[in-house]
Image (cartoon, rainbow, N blue to C red; front, side, top):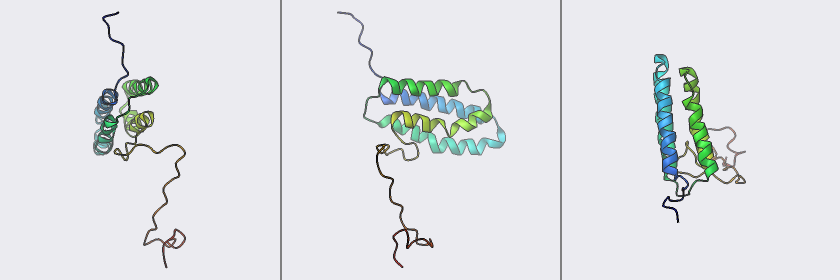
Length: 137
C-alpha cells in the first residue's frame, strides 16, 4: 500500500477562497482608476460577500466544477487593463456562482432547478396593471 493518500476533491471553501482572493486582486487593479474608485468599491461590497457565501455549501464539488472555477480565476488573473478589470468585477462572481450552482445576488439561496417555474410577480399597489397582475380593484 502506498504511503501517499488519495487526492480528494477540493471542498467548496478551498475553491471559493481562491476565487475570492482573485476577485479582490482584480478589484485592486480596477481601483487604480481614480474616477471609478467608488463604483469599484460598490461592486466589491455587493459581490465579495456573495462569493464567500458560496463556500458554505455542503455539497462536494465535482472536479469539472473546480476546473471551471480555476479557469475563470486564471482568466481574470491575466487581466492587466484596469478598465477590463472593472468589466469583469460584475461578471466574475456570476461565473463562479453558475459553476458551483449558487447565486451571488441572493447568496443564501441555492439556484433553482433548471425546470423550475419563475416566481409569480407580486402586484404593485401603484401599478396601473395591478388588476391584470391579480390585484383587486
